[in-house]
Structure formats: structure tokens, C-alpha cells
Length: 98
Image (cartoon, rainbow, N blue to C red; front, side):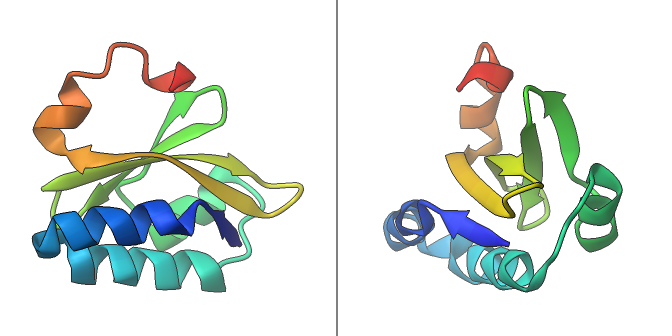
């Protein structure tokens, strides 16, 4: 899969060093993946949730952080829409439209 806005990941972990190794691990797994469906994502990341409108929520570092991405299976890309702490994620009103 191709990660769109990978710079967002780097900027986040530079500002939040505790997330660095977990986000790098997530990125590495995504780049190696060839997902065709939600079931394929679940094989790689068991705790991922589908929240509608092609948005998926990943728990990062034991749920210390959350990453929201739009995944387009047909063109094999993952667009980063949000990275933040669990508390920051909880303040999002409409996750499927961010």
C-alpha cells in the first residue's frame, strides 16, 4: 500500500517521541501490505475499526495513540487523516468526515 501524507506521521512522532517506534512499525507494515478488503487489514492489525466513509481507526502503541486513515483498496493507497492521543481522538465529533 502507498501511504499518502507520510510526512504527517514523521511530523507527529518528531513532536511526540513516545509514538515514534510504534508509528514507524505501523508504516512499515502498511507499506508491505496488499490489502483488498477490511478482512485483510484485520489480518495485519487486529484492533482496527471501520467507522464509515472509507475511514479506519488504528490503535497505536497499545491504544496510547490513534491513527485515522482513508483506505482506497482499488488504487492501493492509505491517506492519513488524523494522528493523536486517545483523548484527542475522543474529542473528534464526526470521525467519518475528518
